[in-house]
Length: 82
Length: 308
Image 1 (tube, rainbow over the protein chains, first blue to last red):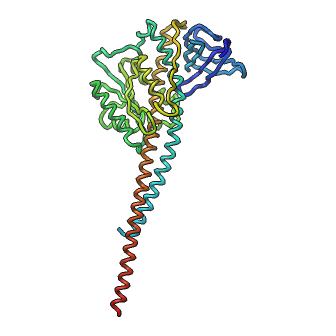
Image 2 (cartoon, each protein chain N blue to C red):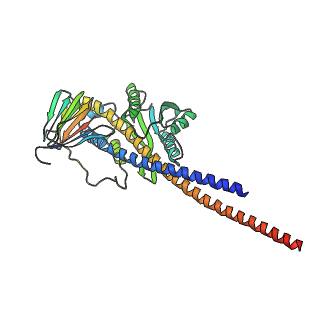
Image 3 (cartoon, rainbow over the protein chains, first blue to last red):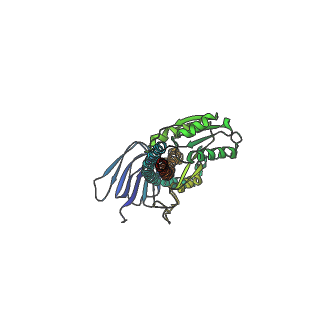
């Protein structure tokens, strides 16, 4: 993993929706919209309803609708529990 | 037994073998699918666990009602979720879970009045309903594709009771999938949530052997401090119900995988037995036929002898 990317896992109880490397990701955080870049400081926050946008190197940005959830960022890995 | 009777019997035994063999094949396919499904959800549980582990280091964590350990309290009411299958023909699977449940109840000195039973699967529901337990919730006909919504009803009910103070603890009895030939009943503690119970659960999600066995050295780094937004309490309020949900979900997946494996094995031995029986009957059939022929021939020859 290069220096300007991070690993992101988006999972709901039954399945993993996304598991890969991203350049940046935008979340509907509890205190407003929040964009996470690689090497963000360790963070835990709840998510409000909205859309998660994941920008990867190759593809178009991927979007995931979200009702509620928890975002955890640590060790250059973002984990989203929907 | 007359020849015709034996023939009919051989036919019916062979028919049975065909049916059990078909059931075996169906269970084998379902088993594989349930195992895969049980695994795909593992990432979620592991991630939830790591978040919880780190949050529980903070001071406020122990005060959340779902994590509060009430073991010291005298008047305890418990809920126990019993996961069984809807249908039989799966060996000792269901009776093992029921036995484990009863053992757990007696070990914890819980009697009928203090226990709410949540039965997932008809076998367990019928068993406890018949014995005058308080079967507070029944969930039946849950398909093989277990959806999030199937557990929501169960988890929401448990959380509701817990919030209202109706129960102080919750356990789940289900069948732990170890391998195709080995399934063990297990009883796990799900409320109050502690990092230990969660860890145990995550470990139990993967089979010990085979394709999906755990890989050594899968350990994450634990950062010292987190920025928590908006605050620990809100995050825990969001996270803990999810953990309860995931615990129930995995117990259900494990039970499904076990059910199909147990049924496959049971059907396999039924098929083998039926084949053996058909072979035996064919032998009897041939013997009977042979002796009938011998008798007829000797009757004819003795008849000829008499006429001379």
